[in-house]
Image (cartoon, rainbow, N blue to C red):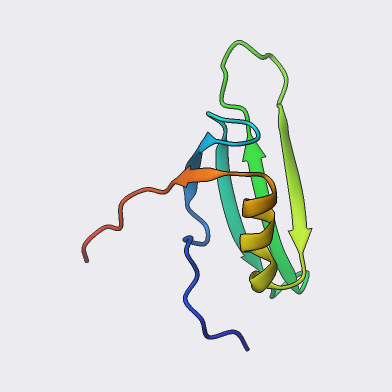
Length: 84
């Protein structure tokens, strides 16, 4: 079981500011209950494209997510945490 806090929120959409695919949305999903791993979804939000433009990656461990972010040279803006 992984206990280290991650530098990204699961299940929230962020925006890729720089690196591969700037301006695209990104979402990191904890899918360990179904597939045993984590999905990273990115999507081009450009409304001028009539078809879906996006990619996904599946990673077995959350500890691999920072490596993918670094490899893609992504700077990501996540939504601000909401107060409860």
